[in-house]
Amino acid sequence: MLKPQRKMKKKEIKEDKFVQFTLEAKSYVEENSKRVTMLAGGVFAIIVLIMLYVYLHNNTLIEATTLMGKASVEYQAMNYSTAKVFLETLIEDYSGTDAASQGLFLLGNLYFKEKNISEAKKYFQEFIDSYSDTDILLASGYAGIAACLSSEGNFESAAENYMKAYKATPELLESADYLYFTGINYRKAENYDKARDAFRKVNEEFEDSSRSFDAKEELLLIANK
Image (tube, rainbow, N blue to C red; front, side, top):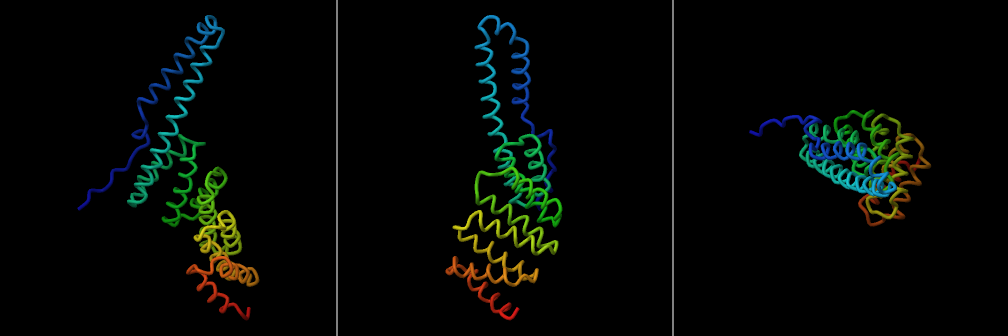
């Protein structure tokens, strides 16, 4: 039998050497900046600060990416409590990095799996507001919000967000799903004209996908609506 996972604590995630270096470097610059400025007209002090910034920046990216990797592993292993600790630490301590933005998306997924829709929707929205690197992930963020809205019975808004997901990546085969669920939610909202438009678009743009057959069935169901 597998032993239960020990819940991680935030303080266990910190890198002691990195923190120690940061404090020592900061102290050095503060204590010696006046003397260095007097001796070298401030040039050396500026170089030290630049080197410090580059070092901290590079290490921050590495640590944020590593933390995101750990969270992903725990998420895939369904150790959600441990994944949540990693993700919350990532978002809190490494805000502004791509890894932290991606962590918002993964945390949204985690809360959605736990059926905590309000928290899931919050994190999906924060992800969309902060992330602009990859259209595929951005589309997934819109789809995440759409799934939350649909589960709340807000079908019209869900359809609009599925359409945003499609528009973010219209060339991908996976976008057939976004269009199809756009139609499904418009149908549930009894907006049959927009539902028909979405289902027809599936057939026109993704004729070879499995969703094309599903869309044709939906068109038959609402033919007289």
